[in-house]
Image 1 (spheres, rainbow, N blue to C red):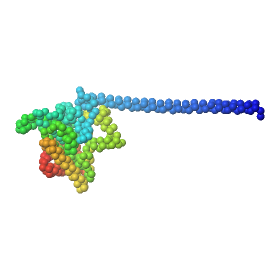
Image 2 (image 1 turned 45 degrees about the vertical axis):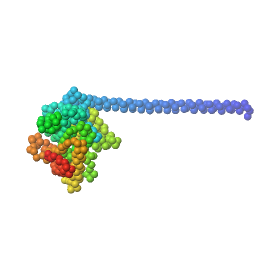
Image 3 (image 1 turned 60 degrees about the vertical axis):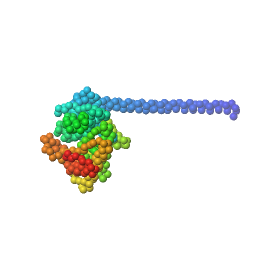
Image 4 (image 1 turned 90 degrees about the vertical axis):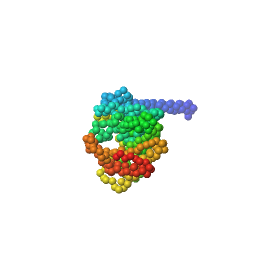
Length: 413
């Protein structure tokens, strides 16, 4: 083959390769364009889905905001709203109690403790120190003041009957002028013998009662808070709440893991799934008008957090083993009473402990209202145990423990 023929053949091959390359390039363009269109469609579809979800979220949030505002208006126009007129209505969203990790809980400052004006009550609020009192209580005690602190549960606090008896009693709440600490203050200031013994000082009695409290709560609250108020005298009136507490036939029962909030706070701090649900529920209950409105009963608003101590009445009677567990539980409670006494003794604070009457055990003649309450409360049994009999055992074992340490616990039952 001549050189010219080879050159022609080479040129022909080059032309074919260029043509093939051009064809490949032409064929690949639709493929690239199709891929670009596919990605574009996916982005558009994703954007539309996001916009749709945002639209749905906006509708849901708008509906919830509307419901929340409706609940706000309902509360504002209710007797509960009247109780907070001239005050921060946001306080109406709060529970009557706030968590206090050292001792469980205590009344929420600013909460309307008494608000039933249909019964002639004036509005009364928890003060900034979480005491049920009109006035603030400074930690620094004035030199001319003799300071008494009364500890206990709802009887000291001045709470009316709890559900379901509260309906029968028309949501009665004990007003400031009738609660035990205030009456003690009036009596002590009017008694010349008492005034002489305390050097003519003015008696100030602080209501440190908290609904649902038992000895272990009271002991821990004294250590963490009450002792800082420098009391000259402590009066402890307790007893009835312990019946619910000890009514658990458990071999490994622990007094300090009983009561409201303990399990809830533990689960929240463990960061468990159940703890997250507890947190969300508690947050909604304390931060929304809706939950406050839902909790309102005949315009009276939410009451205390109903705790889960003990069990509902069980048809089975307790076995001897269950009785032994209960009595051992009571002994734990009696030991804590003794520790409370020794703590006050160490702080050199004079003190008086008394065991309150319990409705089921009380021998006084019933008033017509008490007869109605007795018919509806259904508290003859707490779990497996007879409530009245359990309280009798509790009273005897606590008094016995006091005698063992040379301390008399007054029996007012």
